[in-house]
Image (cartoon, rainbow, N blue to C red; front, side, top):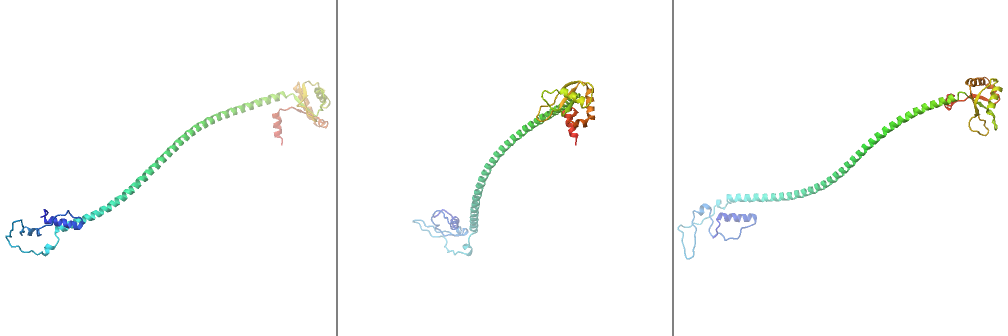
Length: 286
């Protein structure tokens, strides 16, 4: 006889049918199955070796009724629970598949994140290098700006010095021109006088004064000589420095009155001018 109750045995058999997994093999239940309320009301026949007993009450064969052939409520509930478990297991399988896919996506995302982190590090390294280069460039620009400012400062100083030098040069030129003009104040130029070897320039000048200008006054000359270097086929003018300015003016004014007579003989008389004065007169002429 089995130690399991009829309800436990029926539950195990029903579970085995639904799940396909049965309990360990056990001996079949030897007695007649009755519903719980009838089981306790109807005596069962037990046979022991060497002893035969007769039932105290007559045994009436029981025929299953409609209510007895129906599945008990607890079995229905158990079946529903098992179905619910199967559905839950199926859902758990789907959830497991979804979780596997999710894990694969998470692994893929982790790989992408690692790749992005590596690229980010490279970009940060490149950015740091560019920042260092930019900072060096800024320092160089600042240094260059400082040098340019110093150069501009020196340039302004040089311009001021050059301007002062120009002003001083102009002043010196004016002084030189004034001194040169003063030194030439008593000079007169005689043009068209033929050149000969070992000539007496002073005698030639006095001859022109007495013969061409008809001046009988005794003229005193300090220096008389040819002007410039000798050249072939060209007569150099003679410059004569008068000792007295009045005599120089007498010769100059008389020469102006006798310009035509002098030109007819190829001669010319004029005052000596500085280069600055000669340039001014040349620029004034149309």
